[in-house]
Image (cartoon, rainbow, N blue to C red; front, top):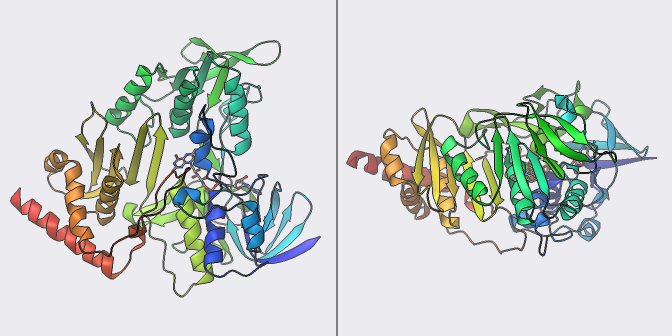
Length: 479
Ligand SMILES: Cc1cc2nc3c(=O)[nH]c(=O)nc-3n(C[C@H](O)[C@H](O)[C@H](O)COP(=O)(O)OP(=O)(O)OC[C@H]3O[C@@H](n4cnc5c(N)ncnc54)[C@H](O)[C@@H]3O)c2cc1C
């Protein structure tokens, strides 16, 4: 069997869903677009899997968190794809792609031709076996990347109430899972090799805040060592984990969150790769003119950071996807992708966001004994990154805007003293120079708001930069 489509998206995750919506907004016709996904369900908001999906009471279940509800947009159920004439091929792996011939082959034996291909294959969870530890297949060892993993985790969790879980890793999936396990009345020990959790983003001060809270909820931390092997019972279930430092922890279940690897293998040797992903230009185009890449798999230029980056976060998946649809449908009207990196996480009652780049010197601010605090990163005399825990929408918007504008900072101590006011006061000036923004509607499974202001371009941004610079210049003269 052989079919042809003008546009084909390989992968049916977050980016595919957001791209589909944008394609329809920009007038894609019936039978022009096809999405092929290995997963058996239509694109959904993956971050929900480690949050509301694991709640013991009223957990989120599909269809409530299909894309694009996470950005306050339409809920794209399978019916939506049908109504919009988008071919959704589910439960089907793409086995090979020939970018020279513009064809691909699916696991069901179908050959498909395309004019333009969008790679949205995301990433897979790293397995313990890649680090020489055997046991991933045991029935009480869980990973968390897709819906099948999440279903499995819920089942294992429900069979372990009152028991012991060991969480391997200290990144955001591990932290979110640990919080969910505790909420599900399971005793948790976290094991990771670094001195603190979230080492790629958090400073020790920020990390310590969360670790103290987790400890107050009963979570034990074993830092500076790694898993070396498992003990199994006669049924092959893990009963304990052995650590490199010689200690052993009893375990009724294990959750592994040790990172991800982008799904690039279909394109190795065909497209230019860098930083473990598929390299694209500012138009999200790969080294082959007919092929684009978005989401976790794409390595794209981030002006604010002054380098190319691969981001493993939902906001960049959503926004690269929207941008690629614009680039393809309206090439003359669409410029390069300009992006302010946004990372966020939610666990227990915490909710933090980080904007920009965590490079340079750090200035902490706020109440590290209370519930609202943050940090600014200053690199080469400019604000390049901002972190805030417990902010209001206005406060998050203010740190985003301040980071986007990269104001010069020559007195770090003063910025620390001003704390959140540093961003808030500048933001007020900016807002008085920009058009008003309509608030989005709320949704039961909203994970991250998207600020329409970020998309504002040209005159408004120029005016905003001038306003911030004027305000900031005056402040500096007074210091
Ligand atoms: C549990 C969890 C919680 C998260 N929480 C947060 C959070 O709080 N904040 C945040 O910023 N980010 C979070 N993320 C990250 C975020 O979900 C990802 O950045 C985002 O999903 C990336 O979107 P994507 O479309 O690039 O890839 P994905 O959403 O992973 O989609 C890729 C799709 O491609 C399919 N695929 C792969 N290879 C093939 C093939 N050969 N043939 C067919 N289909 C294929 C996959 O099956 C999958 O459906 C979380 C991720 C996980 C797993």
